[in-house]
Figure 1 (cartoon, rainbow, N blue to C red):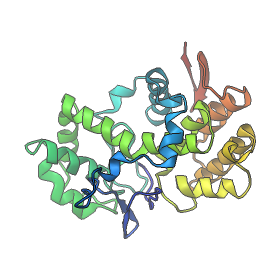
Figure 2: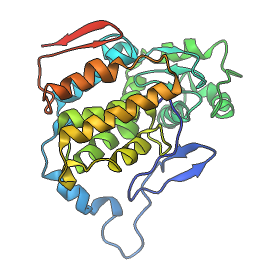
Figure 3: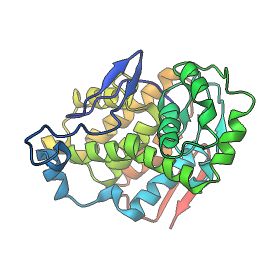
Figure 4: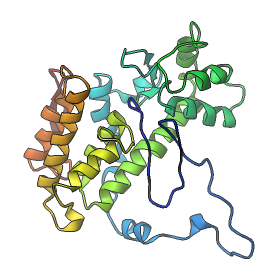
Amino acid sequence: MRRAGFLVFAAIPVVFAAGVYFLPEETPAASHGTSRSPSSVASPDDRALADLPPGLAAPAKKELAQKLVASAENSTLDWRSAYGYIEDIGDGQGYTAGLVGFCSGTHDLLTLVERYTKAHPDNGLAAYLPALRKVDGTDSHEGLDPGFTAAWKAEAKLPAFRAAQDEERDRVYFDPAVRQAKLDGLGTLGQFIYYDAMVFHGPGNDATSFHGLRERTLREADTPAQGGSEKAYLDIFLDLRRAAMKAKDADLDTSRVDTEQRRFLYDGNLDLKTPLTWQVYGETYKVP
């Protein structure tokens, strides 16, 4: 995640502190005398979602989503090549690394390494946890240089760390984005638009983070679940997202919105059907 913020999900307890968010690691155990744990009781939303088609969560569409994100994040369709990516891109978030730009300054990289270390205590990144905790919320490299980038690249060659990145991407970004989009009545394209926004802006509530952008959109349009036009709703969401990107940096390239997502929307491809052709940063990409 390249942007910091606060995270709010319905029915999920969240502890807030100093501009970062902390998700609970485990679901609390059921009280004595209760025959079922809380996680085994489906909410009304869960029951409604169970009746919907998989949409972006279908394996082929999920693969497509990763290619679309990778074209904008790493200028490639080979999204798996990004496991070992790491650099400071000068955006004030410290090191940006891995599949979705986990950042040393926005808590999600720290959370990834903590969870990975819990499962694999002797991994090559564990020694950097004290430094990662110290620099969290800053752009500092203190305690990370000169060895952290090499350690990340080495660890990214291991299937276990790649799987950990996949899991964290899904837990924090993909699954919540698809869930919210489905609850809003959006099709596969809308689910992807939410996912890409979650990755780029971060799952926060401030005006330029995902939930803040969604709330601002709701002030101007109804979701399809509320009886509104899907195309009109998404068009406004993309307008606000583009403005948020420009507010951060007036020179920032917004082609992932302008000549990718908006193109699909204006073509009426709400199901994100292939073949697809789009442009990002002046490069043309095609998926048959």
